[in-house]
Amino acid sequence: MRYFYLIFLLGIANSFAVETCSRVAVINYQEVLVDAGSSKKGEGLRFYLEKDQVAKELLDEYQEKNRPSAWSAGTSTLGSLMVLAGLTQTGDSDGIANRNTLLYGGGILVAITYLTSKTIQYNNEGILKQAVDQYNKRNRPQIFFSPYGDGNTAGFGVGLNQEF
Image (tube, rainbow, N blue to C red):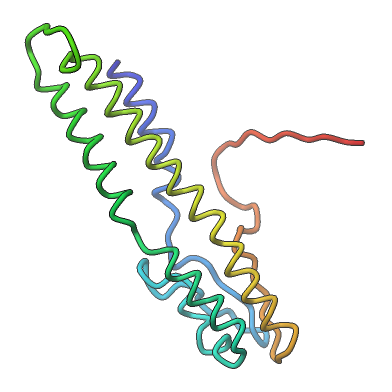
């Protein structure tokens, strides 16, 4: 069981290594930091996106949806407490307070919460891309930015390909 947790933690270590401030956009042949801080993702583009009302509204929506939610924090805390209770329990009791039930249930709850929040964040990046596209339709200078990265990340992934 301990090896499972160790492998799980090592598997997600790459996602913690990604820095928020590493994303850049190219405007007038200059690189501009997109993220000023972890709580204000996309703030580096605000100066340009404020020139277009639609792009500004989309940026505000993007930043609003990127805020941590109380649901995510609560379920992660509950899962962590369940794992901690399972680790500290010494007796073999039956029922819901069983050691394995607490360990597995807490671990699964933390994993589901993590995956849900990462999925929401990934899907939310489309709003930022839409804001940049709306700005580029009507304004100059053009912003060259892809929120999904350039594919130079380390790690592994699984993909499916279907050709017709």
